[in-house]
Image: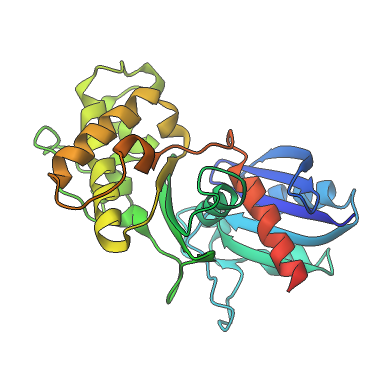
Length: 289
């Protein structure tokens, strides 16, 4: 039995796992994201316990996924200063003489849902993570979409809600882009309290849903995927998805035909394992190729 390594590198924690060729998780651990010199040795120590055949990495970004680039496998212009221009693949391959698959954390989550979750048996899907930041990825006919680089859907421009005109946003690059208006830190900055403390009937959730619904509609208009998935910690607020459905239908105004909105705009089905499963699947692909 071949063993596969998975590294889901998030902004607040690394989730590392070992799994088999059927994408079953054998063991996993969680490590706080601090700085490379502190976090990576713990990752290596965990994976070294097993005879790993291939490793899949899904990382926060921006990252360089162009295999022809001199900085392929790097985390590039991240706001996390300690991780800027960090050679992620190089650091891993110093310790493991195996193939390494490298993509964004959101692409890994998307691929996990495509392999074993709510996007299984369909040709196209888009996945957004709404949490510490907002990222997006797309898959078409089994292939993760990329061009010059990976998509940066979380930084799209959106219309400002009429009751949110005075909020300057939270994105260090663009201020009031989608991430700057609807990410977890943006929600808390706007409200002055943690998201968990905001009552489900508070108008702040209507504002957030308006921005997320715009992302969904923009996605439907541009890519026409068979399913749009919203994951991440913010989407654990179950009432938020209902508001997104309502706002999406209002904004769409019956213009494009999509499946029933409850089936079209959904949350993940793999209980927060989608990123790890995606990393395992990408590791398997890399090994088999």
